[in-house]
Length: 83
Image 1 (spheres, rainbow, N blue to C red):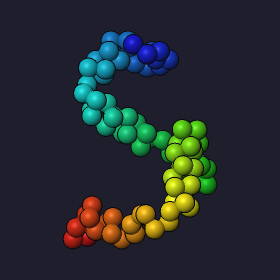
Image 2: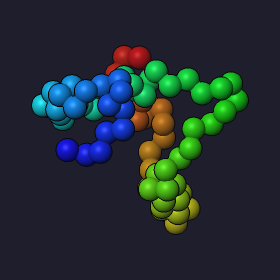
Image 3: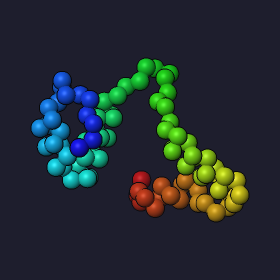
């Protein structure tokens, strides 16, 4: 089991029970917990280095071939038809 530093709030047994959730359930729980974080007005949340790298690579791909993508309006229409 990964290190869990919050044993004063959640017991090891609680953590072990949470780890029996399906992957989808654990992801949903993670998103729920993240949604409870409210930064100070005007504050920004840090961007992990792996995400910065992915964004930089996407930007470089776009700059090499700007016509390869599709417009946001088309993406939105395909994802959410009728909206």
